[in-house]
Amino acid sequence: MTTLQEINKSITTITLENGKQYATVPARITAFHELYPEGRIIPEIVMFDNTAAVVKASVYNGETLIAVAHDREERDKSEVNQTSYLENAETSAVGRALGFLGIGSETSIASADDMVNVGFLPITTTNPMIPTTPTAPATAKPASAPAAAAKPAPAPAPAPQPKPTPQPKPTVKIPQTVEEARALVLTFGSNAGKSMGEVEAIRPSNIDYYASEKFANSSHADVIAAAKLIIAARGQ
Image (cartoon, rainbow, N blue to C red; front, side, top):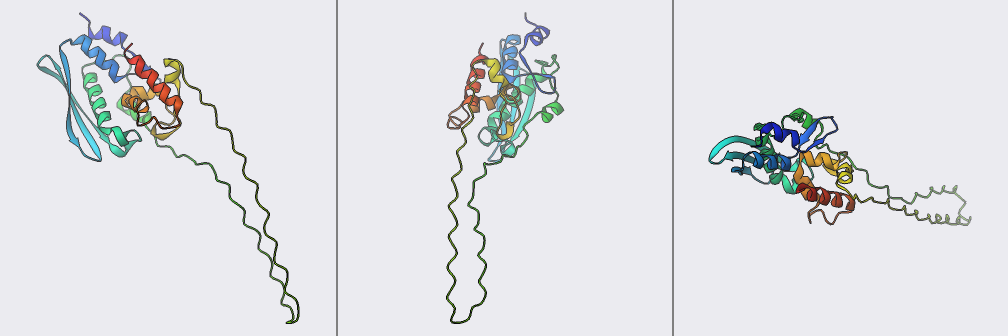
C-alpha cells in the first residue's frame, strides 16, 4: 500500500521565485486517489453572486468525511477572475482540503503568506504614444497702419508634418517543450511578471483560461501555445 510519505516524495512540485516548492492542485488530486482508491472530493457552492464566490470542498474516504476546506474569490481580484472566479474558488478549496490531509505538505510547500507575496499583482500598462501635429506658432499682429495703408498678407499655412515610420512588431517565440512553456514569463494583466509555471502552481484554472476560446482571439500566441503544452503534460 502506498503511504503518505512515499506520495510526498514523488509528488510533482514547482519551485516559485521565493525558493520554495508548491505542489499543484492536479498533482494533489492524483496523489489523493492513489492513497484513497475509494475516496471522493465533493465541492459545494456556499455563496455565488456577481461579485464573489465561496466554495466548500469535502473529502471522503468511502463514506467517512476526512477533511473540509473553504475558499472565497472576488470577481474583481484579477483579470482571470472576471470570468472564472467560481472555478478558482473551487480549485483552491480542493487544494486546501487535500493539504489538510498532508498531501504535498512535506516538500517545503509555500505558506499562505508566501503565496500572497508571489500572488497576482496589478500592473500599469503604457499605451504607445500617438504622434500629434505641432501647433503652428502664432503670427504676430501687424502694427496699426494708417487708414490708407494696405492690409498685410496672410500668414503662410504650416508645413505638413511627416507621417511616423511604423515600427516592426517584435518576433514572438512559440515554446516547443513543457519546460519552455513553464519558463515563459507573462507581460500583461494581473499575472504580469510571473512565469507560466508559477501561475500553474497558484491558480491552475488560469492555465485553462489561457488555452480556452475566451482567450483565443488575443495576440498572445506564445501564451496560448504554452498553456496547451502544460495542459497536455498533466496526464503524463
